[in-house]
Amino acid sequence: MLINEATAYIEKNFKVKVSIKSVDLQPFNKIILNNVLIKDLNNDTLIAAEKIRVSLLWFNTDDNILTFKRVNLLNANINFNIDSLGYLNLDHFINKLSPPDTVSSPPSPKPFAIEINNIGIENSRFRLASYKPAKQDKGVNFEDMDLRRLNIDVKDFGLHRDTISMVINSLSFVDKSGFNVEK
Image 1 (cartoon, rainbow, N blue to C red):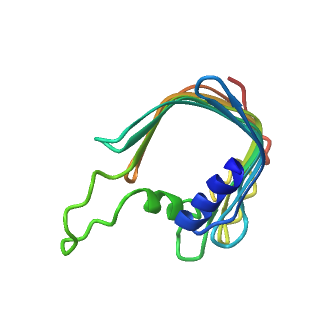
Image 2 (image 1 turned 90 degrees about the vertical axis):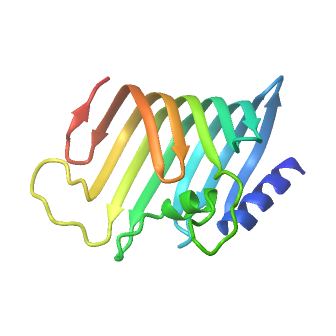
């Protein structure tokens, strides 16, 4: 029941397909989402994760800020695509978090923000694919990246309107070009 309500809320508000196989609740503020799939507007996989562990801290209704103590993604596939007009498939989600800035609209409540004290991504894959990326014979192609064995530890993550901030404590991965980063 909880899974159906959560996925229905996300699908309705973000206009995307979400699937969660099961949810485990642990006292007092921990949630484990198992076999999560989030599709983008083109019905392509945005995020697929074996497990997402979340430890909620609080929701400040005055400032409209949702704060997490920790978020962990395990065995995830994260796919960002840039279309022919230069739009990132993640832009849709970010834009939905904040009301539009228009002169004609009445004053609205403070825009929604997310803060996460610690983020861990373990044994995952990150892909960034641009529409018709430039061909490159050697080195990392930043228009067509494929990072495997991705492990990252982040603190002080913030998403406020169109600004993302964070401190990266450790990072390791292997790009398809052979470029290797070890913590």
